[in-house]
Picture 1 (spheres, rainbow, N blue to C red):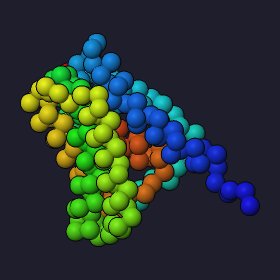
Picture 2 (picture 1 turned 135 degrees about the horizontal axis):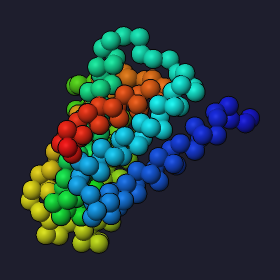
Picture 3 (picture 1 turned 90 degrees about the vertical axis):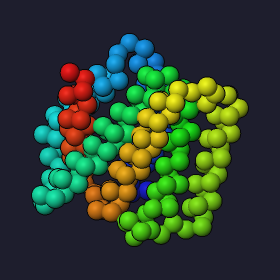
Length: 202
């Protein structure tokens, strides 16, 4: 029986994986030419230039409750401004892409530990095994390349802050069950990211 899912939805996890895995390397290259907050502000503004016309073409439904907008903005700020902002600061401080990656790879573990209390979500034994294997794989790759040797202390602190930011963002999203059209949720969250980075860039 053929799948009823559209092709873009089937391919979305693969596309996400490719974009996410290449993000740190691209950031390190970009930060050779621009300051972290300027880089992120340009990134968020560029994404909004693409998303806003899409909204008027697709006309997806908007959140009906005022608090839903607040929750979207909080998640956007935690992930786009705090997580990416501190990650880019860590890069600028001299931490390698591998060094930041191995620290933020702890995020699923932290979410798994906190989610049962904060979001009421249980983590099965099979999922714990998967998380442990994923973390072990990331640690093995980074250690094999000696990517976390002689890192900047300030950069490491920023990377840990980034880890806490994305963990808080994911938990907030789980706790309040935010589920809206991608164009709507991403637009709101990138607005929050731009609001958090642009004043610092200026």
